[in-house]
Amino acid sequence: MSTSSDIKDVEEGLAFKPKFDAAGLLTCVTTDAATGDVLMVAHMNDEALRKTIASGEAWYYSRSRNSLWRKGETSGHVQRVVEMRTDCDQDAIWIRVEQSGGACHTGRRSCFYRKIEENAGGARLSFVDADVQFDPKAVYRK
Amino acid sequence: MSTSSDIKDVEEGLAFKPKFDAAGLLTCVTTDAATGDVLMVAHMNDEALRKTIASGEAWYYSRSRNSLWRKGETSGHVQRVVEMRTDCDQDAIWIRVEQSGGACHTGRRSCFYRKIEENAGGARLSFVDADVQFDPKAVYRK
Picture 1 (cartoon, rainbow over the protein chains, first blue to last red):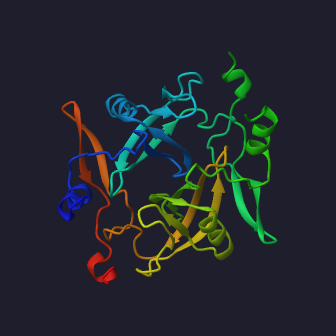
Picture 2: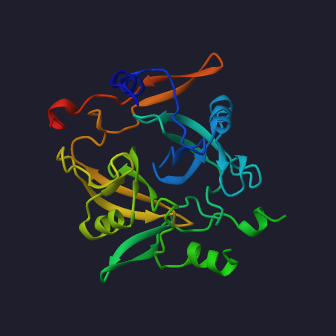
Picture 3: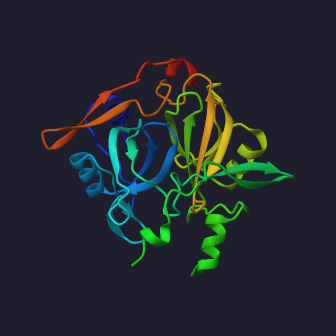
């Protein structure tokens, strides 16, 4: 059990004590430093976190590929970190980045290119800021 | 296994098909519609998602309390949803909100009130945008 003094330390202290989940991961939200738009949501393990802090470029951990991943390694679309923050309970990271090209593997600037709207008791999507910045087939070809 | 036609449907289609994780949750990033700042990262289950879409106010699912949670229910600090988006693989939600009071239970506007900085091979936190907007003891008293 966490004591109230442990909690105060995590929430009000200046020691960085990232709280990884059972899989050893933190959630990372990446926003565009220029526009404030959310570019992507991904995960970092301890190594990705340390490499991001040390290099000033975003590294993540891919759950689907089970591997460390330097953003832009294949596409060239790297993310330069302008500011990095953690939240109250230190289980999430927010990085503001300068994004070269696009963050999304579909070729868009952001992964969040569809809006959710209520529609006759359900919900429907519509495209927004969905211009394709690059051709994923050309960028990710093997 | 997902076929490439399933993937294309999820990524390029206009049907909303939220992909909940094994615990039945999506990750939700909530930003301030006025400033673009990330206010919080939380989770939504199917019911929280449907209530958010239907009511235009943010509902979440608390993993620690195992319960549905209308943001601001106790504190009065509700979040009016200005726009709601989903990402390429539909396992994350981004909502832009008008936040009344503060989003963080510590009394701050945002949960992300500490910056991470490299410090002699490690990392250290410093406060940023950390002004307390309300007294949590007064707001959350039982």
